[in-house]
Image 1: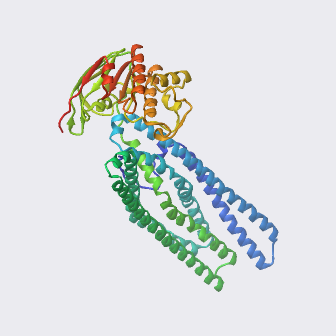
Image 2: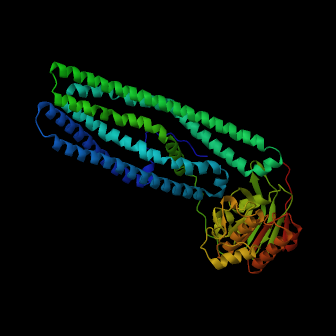
Length: 541
């Protein structure tokens, strides 16, 4: 589906180009990390000052407590600011990447989209980019803390106590080294988990779409077993990732704990021998855990963000691939559609040639046995299938025209979306209640109210009603001037004789008003309605 280009580093620099809201997040997070670092140092110093004064019997504990309260409030405010900024950044970047993804898919055209798996694209755009919350909310704030807080604390501890600074310089690099080793070991496991989830999404989607056919042929249980097997594979892959996550977290915690313990032992021994002042020793000892904390959290939170990172890379790879279809022209209205020896290419096969002329005011029926390639001809007109021969509308090759500017199409599957009947009829066009009612009436669906709610795939309507709503959508696009040719693929396959007669009367009406209607059907009544009939022959496999 999408190329997998190797990109090193925890932050893909392409995000700065394709999601501009990232820049504001980076700037805000840098400021937050700096303020938080100052608060950490102030907190350690105030605690040290208060304890030393208590030991010496000098100073006022009340003033120190008030100062500590202020520091605690500042740190709490920084936590709140991090969560708020991260949430807004995740939502903004997700929205921008989804918009860019849809734009890129549209630019590649129907032929490219037909060669992709919609379930994988949907998974990437939904769950994958939805996982950016963990990436922006957990991983990146800790990464900024590693860049800002850890070096600052090391510098402060180095200036305060040279032996402690040397200990930090020696022990700190061990954590990134182990993080790299763990990352190299877990990359394959994490990529396998993501690819397994994609396969599961594809298999489940295909099974649901073909469930009726599977039940007819007694293969539903086998399909369920296949989905169950994919689910088990995903469960195993997820458990491997969790196992590695826990082990890596344990390793990082152990390393940092040993390093802090080493510093504590060094400080304690020098305090006993009198080589180190209590205030300095206590100050560096309080800072030591905070110096290691960002590095530990980066390693721990990276695993939680892997799905979002992988999905982001998939989207960015697609955006960087220069596969956009050449720009297409907008067709002039009222043209004539002419096909000459058009042979649609399916895999390594060329289907039977078809020639026809569809002029405004006529109905042209396309007939032939199942599998002859009638629907493939419509796919070629929409730009979703390659073909040889000549296809011209208004004197211009259809390969040079934007299909949406001249063709209104309703396929065998209604392709309805969650909403109302009215919103489905007017999809892609400006809504008009009167024209919506006209389109439904002309399609023979006057009994369906425009306010009728429907779920995805037309749930809530019968098969025949959903089919007529899809036809009404094509008629609506013609009526508002968005298309000159209406192409309907088996529009009456789920209708009874009465509903079919109403539909044929409506199509005759729009043809008489100047529409060029293309009609695929196996019904004799459709051929009686048509002004011209083109019969396709089946090509042997």
